[in-house]
Length: 104
Image 1: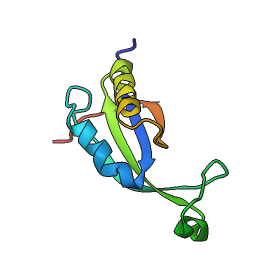
Image 2 (image 1 turned 90 degrees about the vertical axis):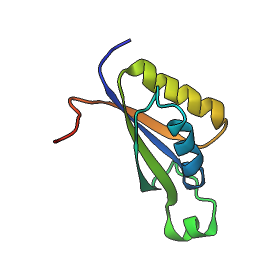
Image 3 (image 1 turned 180 degrees about the vertical axis):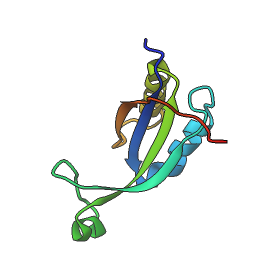
């Protein structure tokens, strides 16, 4: 496994944000912290179900980003999400991180 840091981005249903955040916070060995923000899903692969989604043309989601120290940790977080949220409509991607840290 590569030791290069990766940014793991999770796109989760809005109603699961708190549960996903709690799951990540319970595992500081996998994620030292994360950022979350509101996102809107658009496109032909998005299933619009609720009345407000049909009117607006998008679905509300939450985006959670965490820098993982390596691919093994990213895979462990994905396995945790699959285990704790089976069948949940999550989307994710991994991006190489060239640098990260605190400005002080």
